[in-house]
Length: 143
Ligand SMILES: Nc1ncnc2c1ncn2[C@@H]1O[C@H](COP(=O)(O)OP(=O)(O)OP(=O)(O)O)[C@@H](O)[C@H]1O
Ligand SMILES: [Mg+2]
Image (cartoon, rainbow, N blue to C red; front, top):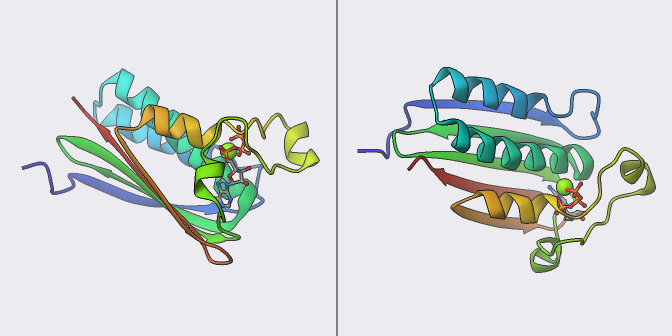
């Protein structure tokens, strides 16, 4: 029980496309509301999904975010094709950011995205291959 997804959907994210940025996390939020997921859980998932989505927009060429829902948990996996992260421990540090002046002008680049994903997750794994891309695996338990 609980291992089989009762809902799964994959969403594409385009790197550099900040006009549509945030759309995937809005759709994920709506789906979870329709599935009757607890609001507190939705809030955590939405924060994690939004931060992961924005990182693909800013730092990768393209990516896919997959939402899986089981009776016990929500899993968000994000796979992108891009520059990758050379030092994951450093990237996970609060305040660390390589955001360009353009990104900062739009109000991003505080270096809080990955730490916020971790804070809102029950399990969080990052793996990356420099020059290829980054994978995030986020698990949030429903109770
Ligand atoms: N998908 C990714 N591909 C390549 N590099 C990434 C990716 N996600 C994060 N990084 C790197 O890790 C750094 C820290 O990411 P994090 O999301 O914590 O902060 P930020 O995006 O710089 O700022 P904020 O999320 O607060 O707007 C980024 O500046 C970037 O160098
Ligand atoms: Mg970020």
